[in-house]
Image (cartoon, rainbow, N blue to C red; front, side):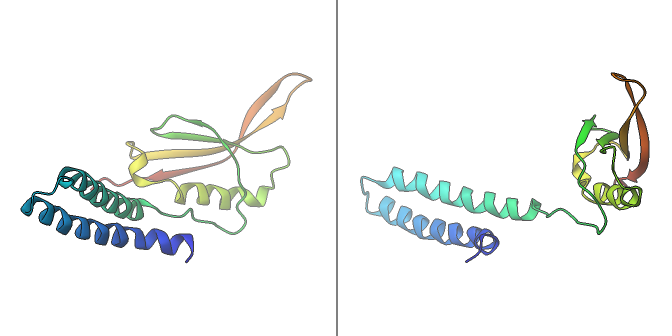
Length: 147
């Protein structure tokens, strides 16, 4: 069983364990067994695990890969409306548009409170021996429509 198959099956597995423990909890309260409070905690914990793993599966999305896009690290993110990424000095010009599209597609809707987010790619241009200036080589704007 692969990891993703196991991930998809964990809510069911913990749900079945929770149902089994719930039945055991009912029986332990009816017959007044000494372990009734321990099994109650285990039942609640297994149900919480089931719900948590289901919520994780609902929120998990894999990153989108676009052909021709390169990985570039984010150097500034204000969490609202601006993301700046850093390209190397030998960053190919034909990879700018696919990289911007990939960054835009992988930006999650719930992660921003602003309606428009600017994503910029910059690289450093050397002016003198110890001085360089940032140059924007690509920019895209993504809008989030609020419903």
